[in-house]
Image (cartoon, rainbow, N blue to C red; front, side, top):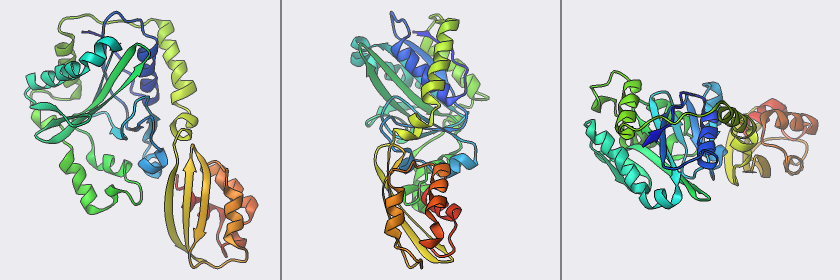
Length: 327
């Protein structure tokens, strides 16, 4: 199979690279490419970032957030994770895509890894997940892409995907991450690092076929797509469907609990409860926050103009904003 080379480590540009290859790359036969991302969380097309990802942890640790063009769940990437993409005509790939995934499994098996396709979209080794994949059809084309865990930082993965109240928050949830997934490094002692593994897999999958080179204008188009779409807050956060949160914290005024609905980056529902003291009913503040962007800076400005301390004795706009939107 012919292949492309994509040395970029920026997740937003790599999402743009995928979309360009799916929608604009001239194709006569399927092509593949192997690529990596710097530390990042990649969410599915239909996911709500606020409900799936610990955005505070991402910001504190310099981890990027990117939304892909395929469905499925959130995944954590770092430089010890290898990604693969295959793009071709849907008439061929839609019929044969399990075969192409079997080719990938066969490549792993040829290196000594007992990989197998299983479930909805997983590649397993001894019952533990080493890869997840997704696909998307665009007109007469189909793209398959997925991950391959070589030596991914599982603790960071757990923290990045731990949202308050989620299954990862408990000790059993933390343990289950390690029980369900598997890094391949110890199963591939012949390789010193992931770069050597990538080179070996590329040779096996290419099977002697040649590299397909992108022109300068095509690279510039990928840069444009990344800049105008995949790197924007609107794409990564604003597309989030409706989700609800419940958060509480004890302040000097008492315990404040907020029940919040957020859809496409906008507050659609908010209710305050608790044993706090204040001079005005909190329902007035709730009404003032409807339609406000779920953005820390915008929210602080809104809370400052509303006079937070009149609803919650002694509470500052910064304190309430951090409770509502801990980004």
